[in-house]
Length: 90
Image (cartoon, rainbow, N blue to C red; front, side, top):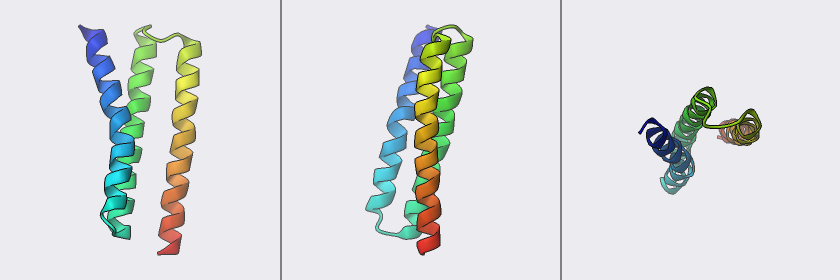
């Protein structure tokens, strides 16, 4: 049962990231967009934590974890860069 709960958490986090980006963009307000981008970053951090838990519980191998985690780090860098650029432009 624990495994399926973790899978559900991972999916929820992964879906939340682009959903918040889209919702923020749809608000047509720079302030709201930045706020939703920051929420997306929070969901990304939650996803990274869930990946670490999956690795610690040995649901993911070190190799699988490293690949997935590096992908999340790249997305993190892109989101933080986007937030920074929007803040500078406004």
